[in-house]
Image 1 (tube, chains in turn purple, orange):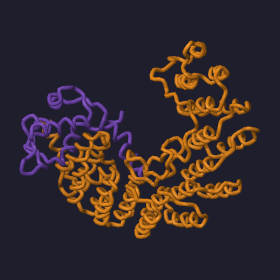
Image 2 (image 1 turned 60 degrees about the vertical axis):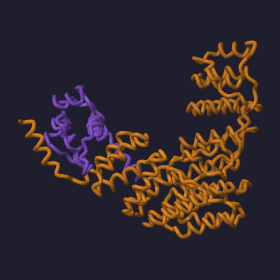
Image 3 (image 1 turned 120 degrees about the vertical axis):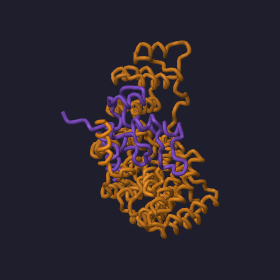
Image 4 (image 1 turned 90 degrees about the vertical axis):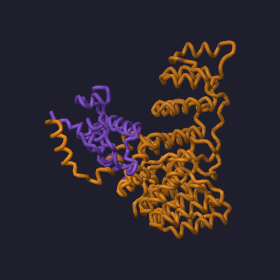
Length: 99
Length: 421
């Protein structure tokens, strides 16, 4: 059972989609300052950016008040829920089509 | 409930013979982050080994027989054993090893070092051919300890039939080593691990027929086998059999017993064992308590398990990381999230690691309670304390959040729109 769960969590395709470097569109390139990054690293960058700039809403820590830089990468939303952050980021990393 | 927390399943099995502390009554070392039915550690002191520690700088950059010989004949030669060890670890071939051996003192410790060095560089086949070659020579046939460690390596990677045939081959040699109780314990352990308890029972009768009295290590291994096969109820029978045979159970036996009973859901009996063992002069340690807590948590009695934590600390037994991880899972599953949070804070204050099962249970519970920011905090802590890899930590967080399902389609539309503009 454990093995099965581990295999699911570490299924090569899933892991690959997390750690493979992807070419970034211009708006993301400006944010990270490099042309390629993996989804996982990008998430960690965004999350540490939020923490470093104290962007969490003081009254509700689950919400993030986006500054201009963050708006540019998170679909221009003024406020995002932390719960939706991974999905929002995933949108920038579309699945590669089968060749 | 009813599921066994993975923390209890994925335990790495300690290797009985190769790990020193010889006292098997001590609890497993605290660095084991997971509770496990404890098994016999090592039962005998290590074979006599020359006291020289491996030299700080390797003597060989490449295995060269002439260098080895010149080292030996140099005015202040390094000890033969360190030459041999270094020679093998630098990757010497079997043939060059055989040509070096005649120049070294031919005794059992030389053989022992050669075989062990080969085993530790995972050259099982070379070790086997070396032993076969040397066994024809009376003076340097492997001793019991070398033989047993060879058997243990063999039974890890080879089918049991090839282990048997090797034992038979050795038995036929005039001075070859014969299997003893330790050998049988290793064999029983290995067949139990592969889930073949019938073979284990057969080995037990072979053991008795060959005039050895099964000791408590043998029984511990069998108990462990039952635990691994999810037939935990059987541990009680093994225990009764031990008592009938007059074998004195040790702490490991009791710990396995408590673990098995807890796993089988017989928590009340497991609690009784706690009293029995105290009566026999064995004090329950962190492993015992953790096993019991796991059993209670799986019955849904997380608060009882938490009380047990207090009780155990009162008795001067300090909980380990594993205890906390077990309790965290139990509290989250029983929906005592706030208590879980308090426990988690104790863990962070103590710099303890979270294991992956506890982490994902905790993060999932936090996300479901809409405490996403705290879940992110746990994610940060898992990375900071190096408990989990980034991939594991993130996947668990992402899948917990996905569970909340906040209309992903709309994002995709937004995304298209924002790109269109």
